[in-house]
Every structure is written in C-alpha cells, then in structure tokens.
Image (tube, rainbow, N blue to C red):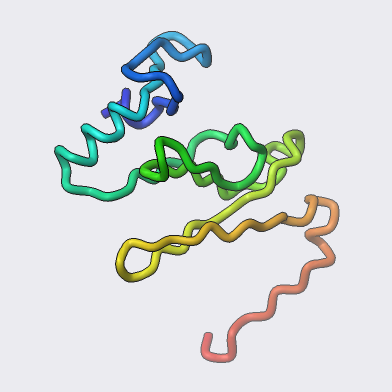
Length: 117
C-alpha cells in the first residue's frame, strides 16, 4: 500500500526507482492499465505531487491517471495553480483550476457565514 501511495507515474513501462528518494517507485502506463483491469476501475486519481506542468492537474497514461494538486503556489514557492476534480455521472470529469491569494492578502478576505448556521 505504501508503494502505491507514494509512487509517481512515468512514461516508461514497468516500475523503476524514484529519484525523489530511497524506497519510492516510479510506475508506467502498463502498471496503471493492470491496476484498472484488476480492480474494474476506470480512472486513477492521485494528488501528492505538484504536476510537472505546474498547473493544478496533469493527465497521464492516456487519460487513465490524473494527478490533482489542490494547493496553489505550494509552500509559497512553486507558482503552480491548484485544482479540484469534478467527477460527473458516467465517469466524465473536469479539472477546475484556482489560485489562492497569498497569505498577506488573507486578512482582506471576508468569509460570511451562511444564514442557516
């Protein structure tokens, strides 16, 4: 389970060592295809890595795997957008990107409580 949780996708086939550190793995589209076949799932969604395109999401392995990263400008350093994945009936999905304000501006954001609270 830990291997699957912290592994990252790669374009090459099979499993390979991950340059992010010892004990971590990279996996190819063949591994994604086998996982989907074995489980009957249609899509793998993962989220622990800023996408390589620096956007809030990235589609891998022929559309069968999506990386979604919700934290925009991760750690105040990366300049990436964040995203959420909206999954619709029939398995269609849409990634909606966002940019959160910097911490200094959060004091200017007014959040009103809903009337029924």
